[in-house]
Image 1 (tube, rainbow, N blue to C red):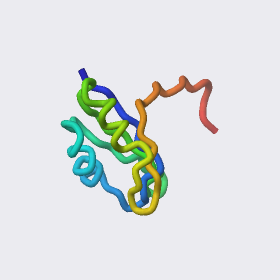
Image 2: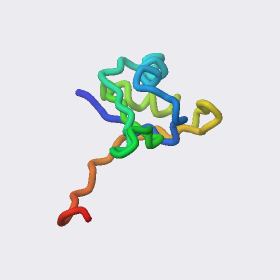
Image 3: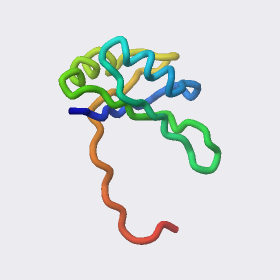
Image 4: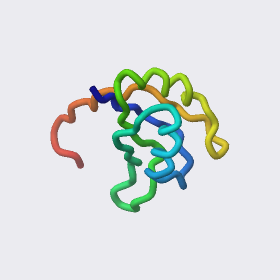
Length: 89
């Protein structure tokens, strides 16, 4: 089974390949995605990494609060996105 981890407070220059490389030290990474702004294409400073469920806690313990590029990472289990109501204006 796969768990999705939220990774916040990323340095702007981090790429998906960087995430895979960093997280691969602690678990087998299934995928990694950096969230980018729709209009500019620039990183929004957070992303998601999918790992095996039995390895997720070890990854969180190892990387939550770790420093990367002068920033303290936030790593935890991703929460489901809340449902949106009505059209976006």
